[in-house]
Length: 167
View 1 (cartoon, helix red, strand yellow):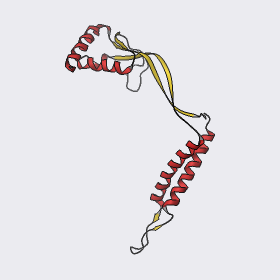
View 2: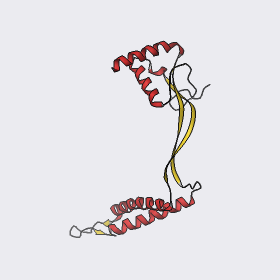
View 3: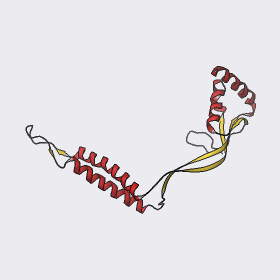
View 4: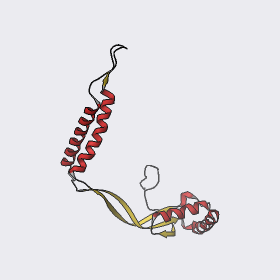
């Protein structure tokens, strides 16, 4: 029995014939949208990527200075939040206005200092200390649009019909 994912679909490669193949995903999506406009049954279409590669793109260099600055910026917000929540005590009488427990500047400075300290410590203790930040994604070199073998001619006519509607 095939495994099922959260949506109840089978977690296996779809069967069928390739009606088109593309070098990038957006072209495959455009093709699928065009045959859908030509009234092709949506549940019969699959886009299959092959020759998968993991691509990691380097975004920025990381240093203790950047870590400290980011921590300070986060700490400023936490200090501001602490001032808003705990910064004033309501007065005992209507004539007695609310009295500040501490001022806004000290809340922001203490927050920035604590945020900086915690971020530098966290970075120092991390096991995967790298000098850069990156994002990774899985990319295919080829994308095929698959439909059931008995619906190939219907997919081709839907592609033609979808192009007429688009024009």
